[in-house]
Image 1: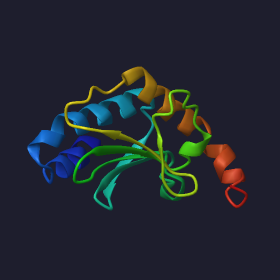
Image 2: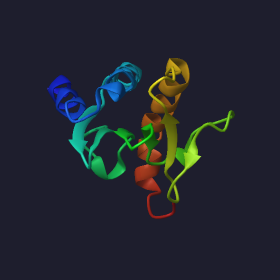
Image 3: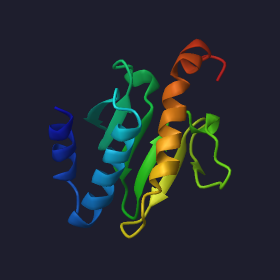
Image 4: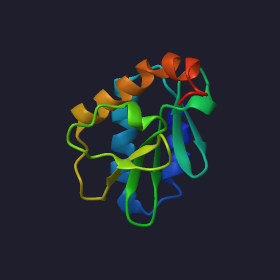
Length: 127
Protein backbone atom coordinates (compact mmCIF):
# COMPACT_ATOMS: atom_id res chain seq x y z
CA UNK A 1 0.00 0.00 0.00
CA UNK A 2 2.74 2.50 0.96
CA UNK A 3 4.53 1.87 -2.35
CA UNK A 4 1.37 2.81 -4.26
CA UNK A 5 1.02 6.01 -2.26
CA UNK A 6 4.62 7.00 -3.02
CA UNK A 7 4.15 6.05 -6.70
CA UNK A 8 1.05 8.26 -6.87
CA UNK A 9 2.98 11.18 -5.39
CA UNK A 10 6.09 10.85 -7.57
CA UNK A 11 3.89 10.58 -10.68
CA UNK A 12 2.92 14.22 -10.05
CA UNK A 13 6.55 15.41 -9.94
CA UNK A 14 9.01 16.72 -12.45
CA UNK A 15 11.30 13.70 -13.10
CA UNK A 16 14.36 15.49 -11.67
CA UNK A 17 12.79 15.30 -8.19
CA UNK A 18 11.90 11.60 -8.27
CA UNK A 19 15.31 10.16 -7.18
CA UNK A 20 15.66 12.36 -4.10
CA UNK A 21 12.02 11.89 -3.06
CA UNK A 22 12.22 8.12 -3.38
CA UNK A 23 15.54 8.11 -1.49
CA UNK A 24 14.05 10.17 1.35
CA UNK A 25 11.07 7.81 1.51
CA UNK A 26 13.40 4.82 1.72
CA UNK A 27 15.52 6.40 4.47
CA UNK A 28 12.46 7.47 6.49
CA UNK A 29 10.85 4.03 6.27
CA UNK A 30 14.12 2.19 7.00
CA UNK A 31 14.64 4.37 10.09
CA UNK A 32 11.16 3.68 11.43
CA UNK A 33 9.36 0.84 9.60
CA UNK A 34 6.22 1.21 11.71
CA UNK A 35 5.44 4.58 10.11
CA UNK A 36 2.39 4.88 7.91
CA UNK A 37 2.42 7.21 4.92
CA UNK A 38 -0.36 9.28 3.38
CA UNK A 39 -0.32 11.53 0.32
CA UNK A 40 -2.00 14.73 1.40
CA UNK A 41 -1.48 18.46 0.91
CA UNK A 42 0.89 17.66 -2.00
CA UNK A 43 3.27 15.88 0.41
CA UNK A 44 4.02 12.43 1.73
CA UNK A 45 3.10 12.59 5.41
CA UNK A 46 4.48 9.98 7.80
CA UNK A 47 2.84 9.15 11.11
CA UNK A 48 2.66 6.58 13.85
CA UNK A 49 -0.63 4.95 14.87
CA UNK A 50 -2.47 6.94 12.17
CA UNK A 51 -2.12 10.08 14.33
CA UNK A 52 -2.01 12.62 11.52
CA UNK A 53 -2.53 15.46 13.98
CA UNK A 54 0.94 14.75 15.37
CA UNK A 55 2.71 13.64 12.21
CA UNK A 56 6.38 12.72 12.41
CA UNK A 57 7.74 14.08 9.13
CA UNK A 58 6.72 14.94 5.59
CA UNK A 59 8.40 14.97 2.19
CA UNK A 60 7.33 17.54 -0.36
CA UNK A 61 8.62 19.47 -3.34
CA UNK A 62 8.49 23.22 -3.76
CA UNK A 63 9.61 25.01 -6.89
CA UNK A 64 13.32 24.83 -6.08
CA UNK A 65 13.86 22.18 -3.39
CA UNK A 66 12.66 18.91 -1.94
CA UNK A 67 11.68 19.42 1.67
CA UNK A 68 11.88 17.06 4.61
CA UNK A 69 9.74 18.61 7.32
CA UNK A 70 9.47 17.69 10.97
CA UNK A 71 6.33 18.92 12.72
CA UNK A 72 8.13 19.27 16.04
CA UNK A 73 11.57 19.81 14.56
CA UNK A 74 12.51 22.29 17.27
CA UNK A 75 12.84 19.27 19.60
CA UNK A 76 15.43 17.56 17.37
CA UNK A 77 19.19 17.62 17.84
CA UNK A 78 20.63 19.70 14.99
CA UNK A 79 24.24 20.49 15.90
CA UNK A 80 25.12 21.39 12.29
CA UNK A 81 22.19 23.83 12.05
CA UNK A 82 20.88 22.25 8.85
CA UNK A 83 17.19 22.49 9.72
CA UNK A 84 15.49 25.70 8.63
CA UNK A 85 12.94 27.21 10.98
CA UNK A 86 9.33 27.25 9.87
CA UNK A 87 6.30 27.89 12.03
CA UNK A 88 6.59 27.79 15.80
CA UNK A 89 7.71 24.12 15.93
CA UNK A 90 8.31 23.14 12.33
CA UNK A 91 11.84 22.60 11.02
CA UNK A 92 12.73 21.75 7.43
CA UNK A 93 15.68 20.30 5.58
CA UNK A 94 15.89 21.63 2.02
CA UNK A 95 17.53 19.47 -0.64
CA UNK A 96 18.29 20.25 -4.27
CA UNK A 97 18.01 17.49 -6.89
CA UNK A 98 21.80 17.06 -6.92
CA UNK A 99 22.18 16.85 -3.12
CA UNK A 100 23.06 13.56 -1.48
CA UNK A 101 20.79 12.44 1.36
CA UNK A 102 22.74 12.07 4.60
CA UNK A 103 21.18 8.72 5.53
CA UNK A 104 22.62 8.62 9.04
CA UNK A 105 21.48 12.14 9.92
CA UNK A 106 18.00 11.82 8.43
CA UNK A 107 17.54 8.42 10.10
CA UNK A 108 18.56 9.92 13.42
CA UNK A 109 16.04 12.75 13.09
CA UNK A 110 13.24 10.36 12.12
CA UNK A 111 13.96 8.09 15.09
CA UNK A 112 14.17 11.08 17.46
CA UNK A 113 10.88 12.49 16.17
CA UNK A 114 9.13 9.12 16.47
CA UNK A 115 10.48 8.60 20.00
CA UNK A 116 9.07 11.96 21.09
CA UNK A 117 5.49 11.30 19.99
CA UNK A 118 4.16 10.40 23.45
CA UNK A 119 5.86 13.46 24.97
CA UNK A 120 4.35 15.66 22.27
CA UNK A 121 0.87 14.20 22.80
CA UNK A 122 1.16 14.73 26.56
CA UNK A 123 2.42 18.32 26.24
CA UNK A 124 0.71 19.40 23.03
CA UNK A 125 -0.98 22.46 24.56
CA UNK A 126 2.22 23.62 26.26
CA UNK A 127 4.36 23.26 23.17
